[in-house]
Image (cartoon, rainbow, N blue to C red; front, side, top):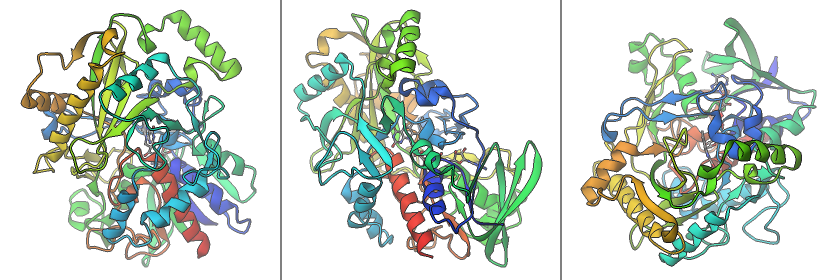
Length: 527
Ligand SMILES: Cc1cc2nc3c(=O)[nH]c(=O)nc-3n(C[C@H](O)[C@H](O)[C@H](O)COP(=O)(O)OP(=O)(O)OC[C@H]3O[C@@H](n4cnc5c(N)ncnc54)[C@H](O)[C@@H]3O)c2cc1C
């Protein structure tokens, strides 16, 4: 018998495993479906090479009516460290107003004044000292990118020439402007929560971590979570928890597991053969994600990833292996920024100037060197849902983010069209302009807003940030209680991961998820 069972050793689960097992009187079990992270996870440049491997759940959405019927690829980490072991390692918190909006939605205790100290508490910034905006004593190592390509600096110069000010610290006083991102990289190696939080706790006798374990159900008796059922190599097992079960399986699997356990919209559960035990209509609803649109240019000279030969790849790996330096110590998303699509808004677009001629999540590279300019919508209106397809826990759920179609005013699409125009403007400035041969995609013929919108629908990707599928709140569609993160109406069951985020923040989701997990641990330890 354990005190606490944590489902999932991802970004959030590893934080909880560390914080909760720091209490020697608490017996903690962590159950993770994946196994140890592969070498590619350690190497910052190699994150995209893990897509569609055993370390990736490799989900696809339902065909998206707003995206010309395409199914959108949704990679998620399936390994110790979770998506934080697969991600691009950018560290960003979002805007203070994002969290104040959470509070205004009924999540009292989650305003900026409440969460900012938690961000500082978890942060160990190696490069920015004596700043009121950064912590230096936490467990989460943050640093500047170890390798900056000269063309990344040129992209920043071009963006400045287009009128966007240089910002040396977008986690500082203001997010607006362009510059270099900060990363969860330590001495040239990925340092997600699997290493920062879980690894140092593994020696503790009160912490057990089991990998290769697929949790299939939370066992609930008389309104209280008692334990979990899981499969190891297809064989069923159970484990019991005295105090509680914490779902940290991520924004897809946490709501899937609630529904498999009979907790969710009762009619929908019955329709797929699951006996409802607790009618909670919001489970799986209100799903949000960051939408991203890349545009690609070929360059006249070889540069960046497009210039890598087999020899460069081999030599750079040896350099990384021996010294943790060089081109493989960069995730190649170092130059970017946050800009406003129109006057009177806070930065609503995140930009990247990636020195890589890629398309389709960098699974394919172009025939010559190039630059891909990405633009992400920071605060989307689109909200979708996750539903069970069947009562079979092995079957992936139906993921329908309803991109664009759930935003009847069309603001999401219109803002992304502006983002494409901003990226084109940047690419027209010196010193990048002189490098560009021609625009490959969407190509110079795509000119009018309507043509660009059609391109956005046909090429948008996820920026990998599903959230809000078990969102916090006090309204009828809320799933988790903001003051405890307990599932409404049940005892002994909490959710602590990206799925409780009530509304998308203006920035990538790892840091906010880690903050949520830190707070969940504080709540649990407080009893
Ligand atoms: C490719 C990619 C790039 C990204 N880039 C960035 C970035 O640069 N910066 C940033 O801030 N964010 C980034 N993100 C997003 C960020 O990494 C995630 O939002 C964050 O990791 C989510 O954490 P989580 O704890 O909610 O879920 P996860 O980290 O996904 O953890 C869930 C864990 O639960 C396990 N699990 C799931 N189901 C079960 C089950 N049934 N039984 C047992 N275990 C189970 C999973 O295997 C996984 O380990 C990226 C994400 C991806 C996928």
